[in-house]
Length: 196
Image (cartoon, rainbow, N blue to C red; front, side):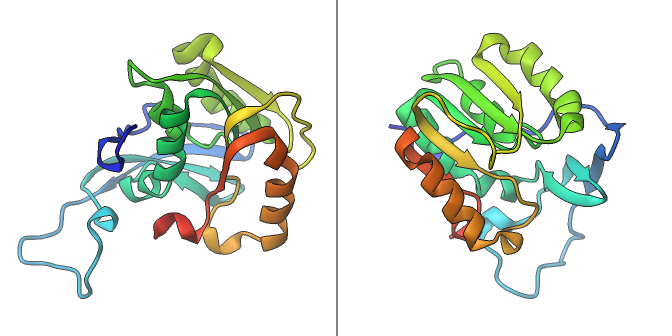
């Protein structure tokens, strides 16, 4: 069983690019000036680490980044995937952050990841890099997850199709959880509970 502190964090290696309504951009987080500290107590995972990062923008909306705190909010899915192994289903390709986290480790018991992504430009920009890296271990389906009909059982199903946890409609979470409950051993949704 992998422990939470042993879950690997990988930054996105996909270069900046643009296609249709989708852009991948790089941005930098500067180090805090010496003596400058946040006015309020910030959990260790939420501290911005200096460095170069990647952001996925769709229709002008920041869908995701590879900032440590965003990766940290996905840790339960990553832990469940590595501990359970087998075949995974992920709704929302994003920057492929969780895919790297479950497939890069040499001893990963994850056999394959099926990703359902509705935006063809995200698939074009991100999918080609993941496919070249993981080959037959990754399958990307161009489909809206609400229309996708699963045909097999997955050890883990993960839903992350929203730009912000506050934008998630409870009805959408319920629809997805109900739809995939009999097709998964464990299922999760990226929401505010992921930051607890």
